[in-house]
Amino acid sequence: MIILIASVLINYFHEFENMSNLQWLLFLIFPMIGAMYYGANFFSARYNLRSIGWLKPFLIGFVWAGVTTIYPFEYHDVLNSTHHPVTILEILLFLKNLMFISMVAILFDIKDYASDSSSHLNTMVVKIGLRKTILFVVFPLTILGVLTFLSYALVHQFSLLKMILIMIPFFLLIIVARSLKRRRSLMYYLVAIDGLLVVKAAFGILAAMVTS
Image (cartoon, rainbow, N blue to C red; front, side):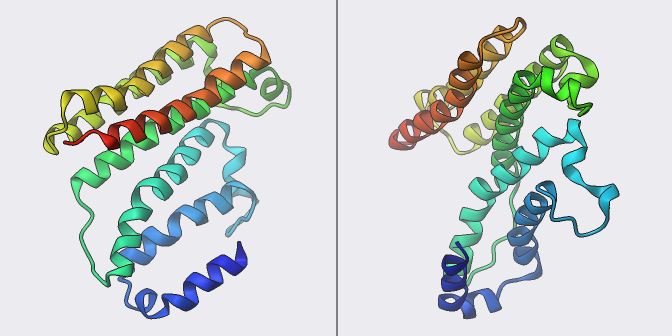
């Protein structure tokens, strides 16, 4: 990994040299947040992000959405030595991905509810309970993610088929969340929750193959 990063920096040194302050901010903020989450603290122990249990899913969603949504735009700009302003549509796409991944992370917290509770890790599920988490957090934010995507899709004039393909993982997420109101086997958690990521990728590829 270090060799790969060094190779990229050497090969595209002049392109990186011409990056704007905003581009550097967008380039660095996601790995910095990820590093702080995993213990590389730049301030003090009081600001250890991993210890803030309720914030954990949104940090994971933030970093994931940044790498998969913002980085492709930045990569294009760096290679072509261009600077384009961050648009509302890019922000909507970022928020859509952030919502989905954050909700999947919350479902993993539901799986780990017993161990987190005994370890006194105050995740959202531990703090407000399983049913309230599903009803007042997962459902509303998943719907918000769908509405955010619809705003993006309508502006870009996506076809109905393309919109349906991209929205299917969100609806499956709601179904899986609803099924977690009662205790399930470990295998169910792993297949159902991990499967959401595979399904999202698969339907995303199918949607990309649909013209307009």
